[in-house]
Length: 201
Image (cartoon, rainbow, N blue to C red; front, side, top):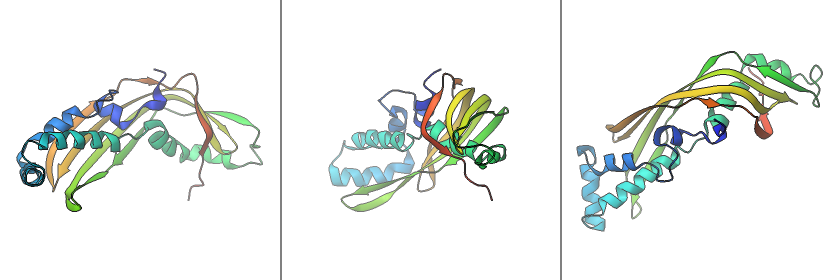
C-alpha cells in the first residue's frame, strides 16, 4: 500500500470510514455498567437521549485514537535504536551527507491509555478508560538519515495487530481485537524536517 503515512490506531480498529466507531456507540447504548449513567442522562436531558449521547461517545473514542502509527509510534521507536547512534557524529557523518540505513526484521510494541472525561452541566460523571496494546511487525525497512535526523522511509513492509478495551468505573464495556493488512512503506515517505535521533543514556 502507499498510504502508510495515514495509518492510525483509529483506522486499525475502526476502518477508514468517516463514520468512526459505530460499533462502540452501539456497545455503549446498553449494558449494566452504564445503567446509572443512562439514568443521569435521562434525568437531565430526557428519556430517549442516551442513544444520541452514545453515538457522540463513540465518535470521541475514535477521535482520541486518531494517532499516527508511523509518526507517533514507529519513528520514536526507530530513533532510539542503538545502531542509529553513530549517525549523531557530525564529524564522521557531515550534515550534508545522506546515509541509507537498513533495519533488520523486528517488532515494535506499544501501549496507550487515553481517557475521556464525561461531564454534564459542569458535573463530572466519570471517565471512559481506553487501553490499547499494539504489536507491529516490520521487515525490509530502509531509512534515509541526514544531519542526525531520519528524513525519509525509503522501503519496507509493516503489519500490526492490536487489542482495544473500553471500561467505565473499572467495568469492561467492550473489547476489540484487530489485525491490519500489510502496508508497503515504498516510494519514500517524506518526513519533512525529519525526526531527530536522540542521544541514549
